[in-house]
Image 1: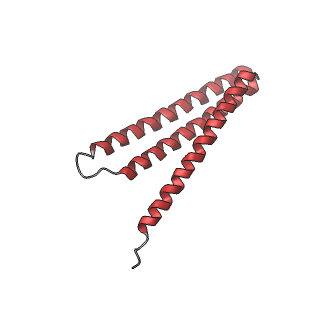
Image 2: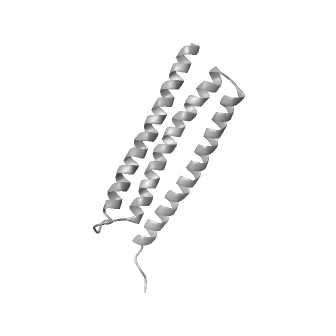
Image 3: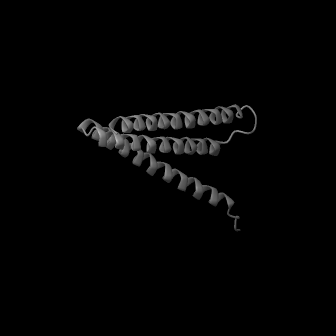
Length: 120
């Protein structure tokens, strides 16, 4: 059972890395595409903010899987080092989640503000 849990933890860790790399690749693609639009008329600073939020979602999802992997590792091999890694990952994930949600709320408020008709 011990070996199965370690194998499962490793698979989940690799999935986490894959999700983070996938999100970073998508973000880089969209960023480069948006920057190339600077030469034309299609550049959008708001799109850059949206790309940042999209990459943040993938990063958070990857960190969720990493936390699951670290929990399994901590259960299988309880040590202060594993517990410290788990705590650090949870703190990073919590901070990222807080600031990402704050940016999303700000972006929504900004886009709602732009859609309101002007009153004279």
